Amino acid sequence: MVDSEIIHKPPLQIVPDSYFGKDLRELPEEEVEMIITQYGTLRNNPDGYRLGQTIMALKQVRNIVKEIPAIQEMLDDSSNWIFTKPEPT
Image (cartoon, rainbow, N blue to C red):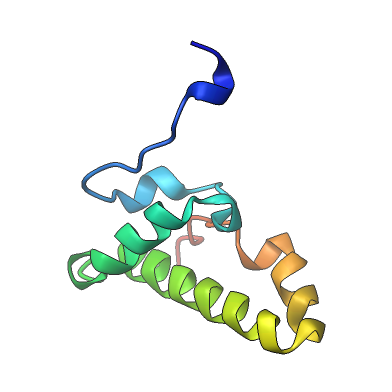
């Protein structure tokens, strides 16, 4: 099997910790939809809540960029979309 033949499939149950350090813009649309679908249970923990909120914001920004190209700068700034673990308080 060649690398190009490998199809990425999202996990059945989203685990927020597995997304730390990932650029959420690079997630396949299927995985984005799965996170949104599971948001009801994800939001019960702080990292799941942040992951769901960030994914929903990303989806909104992508939709806005289609209408207002100047917003592309916000989408291009990776610091907005790399999921990070919050600093302990």
